[in-house]
Length: 267
Image 1 (cartoon, rainbow, N blue to C red):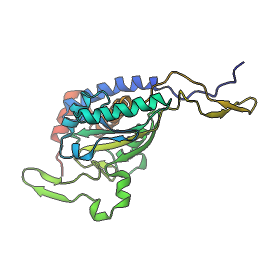
Image 2 (image 1 turned 120 degrees about the vertical axis):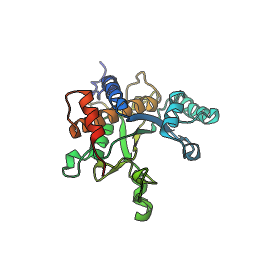
Image 3 (image 1 turned 90 degrees about the vertical axis):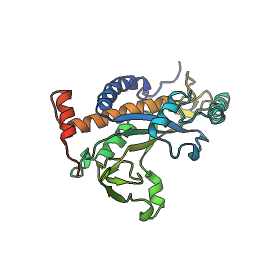
Image 4 (image 1 turned 135 degrees about the horizontal axis):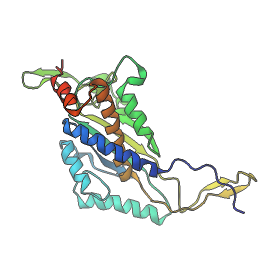
């Protein structure tokens, strides 16, 4: 008789429901001028060169990712092949790979979230939503951990004003959220996904009944789920932003919500 297996973790199939709900939220946000998207920036040791991303709009990066088999934001065959080769080599070794993806939202109005309650801070709610996705082990908003290595003058976003733009910033190190509240800049979040735990090269474990050494079971498994997780990340960001929007502007119809949003005077 095979040894008893421990309770299995929540299946990623559960995220199908999140993606479906997120699609509805994305549609609502899109009709209000808020665009949500995602793209992959690393899988294993393969990374998208920063110079291929800098200076390009989120819309351009998202559209490129939608055409990529690994959802990277560049239409570069050499970079794409590097990512595919990383996955193929891991598969040949019986390994699995994690990676990092970016989720973003543009057109987000000022003032979503709250600074008065810890559980209403929008950055905290977004981090929780992303961390709730299976295998996500780290979340950064804006500069994230990089901000801890820089002096304040290199971290905080300076504020400017013009008649055309009103108040604006030239940088977005805060990732669109300051003090738990959106500041009008794009919301930018990175999420780190660990490698899938089901390996074709089983790791050592222990039989729960006999306490004797035992090799983990071999199950059918993908090598890498980072591109798929990025889509789930889009859904979770959309769900969180839609919730924060409806809290700020409660309405009984879309028309009422749109009117309340349009009539809000920023600053």
